[in-house]
Image (cartoon, rainbow, N blue to C red; front, side, top):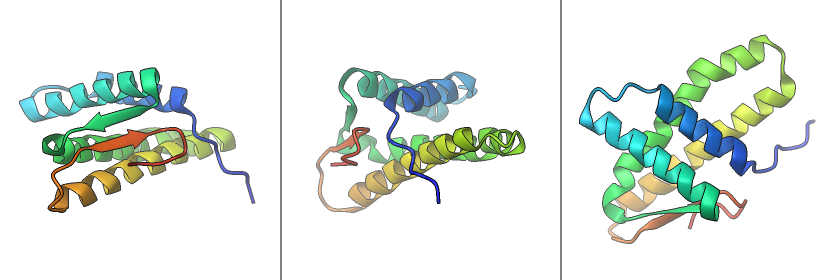
Length: 127
């Protein structure tokens, strides 16, 4: 059994920016999602959390799902092929973190509660 990878905000911020930089912005919705990822990266870097108003939750959920999908389809296979165990654990942690964000965002978006959501990278999760 391996030790869990601790939260690594610096790594996650870099991944968010990497995905935003590598994604084509040829349609307005995709551009808005990539802008959101850059905002999230800036907020996580500055404060360790990112607060989203209720009206942006569905867009944010799609953006973070895209991060998870990108990492799972394009980055993880290379890391596994290189037998980089530490890198694999770190990428899997980032995928899990993105998907936890998606879950929190979708649950709140589906509720009748019109409040914002704060995503945190301090191990406290989402509030």
